[in-house]
Length: 259
Image (cartoon, rainbow, N blue to C red; front, side, top):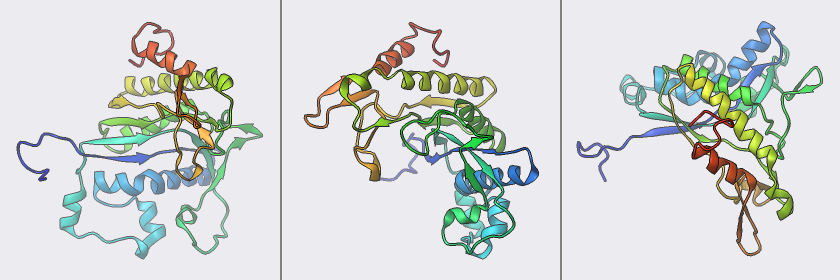
């Protein structure tokens, strides 16, 4: 199949994960650490696509370990997407770890940044089931406006957004998933704010319609709007699925003005 034929009218994009990285303090070192985290996480791909080069922090830190691109390769890559898919779930604080840097042994060591989930003993947000998934609605707004402001405001599809429960939660208990409803309410409100401020978000996908097999974690957690009994694969809509349906039907606009 030739995708470059005139009669082909599809659009091609890239999907990237983007945790929002917030400085732990207002200090310049912590702000720089948070920026390095953004550069290495989403900028690694998006900066090259938009500007034809890696972020300056990556160029300085990774140096000769970065791939080199010819002038023709830069032309092929720069501006090569029609839309950008973003998975956005959570946020974390970042801080400058100090001046002594250990030998680089993996990708994240290059960030020269430390992770924190609380500030002055106060968590960045309530935690879902996964150790990394803190519920931080304002991070959605910051992530979307950051991409708008730093990457020429691309057309965005919010390709994944959701929260999980334990995989062994009982059927009656998991159907009453008010925490998930509040998650979607709060994140969609922040996404709407970003749209009102100019972010070109044209689509949104909740993760996920069904409880499913989650990568290396298998069936140990549940992201679905619909409960799946893994013994017989029967499906039971959770409260969040009914809320989502009504929100999309615009019957309860007080929940969210996103649609």
